[in-house]
Image (cartoon, rainbow, N blue to C red):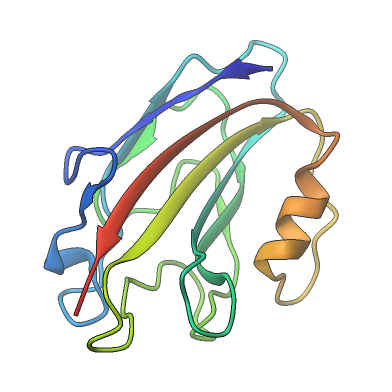
Length: 150
């Protein structure tokens, strides 16, 4: 499987996510850019999860149906053609980092998959449901990790 290049102008890979993008800041999604998407991609799927959350992987952002010809999303914007799903806070779209105070730095995995067919998701999908749905449908993927601590 080939790799999609996923980046943000707001933070470097494994770097700190600015407060502006957190739940205690302005709670706006960070700008993202991507490249090296295979030509046969039907759509892109974006997931941001916190595997360090006390109750297990927490869903911060899920967007499906992203135009495979797109090259990114501006700060606070839904990726082109994308359909936003409920996050772990119960709201549609981005829900910024908000780890428990004193819990140490949490990691936020931004994953972008190029898929061959739409994912069979319904209602309020969990992180695990997204990973299961992507399996066997992915052509390529990319990952960017940010950290945040309160």
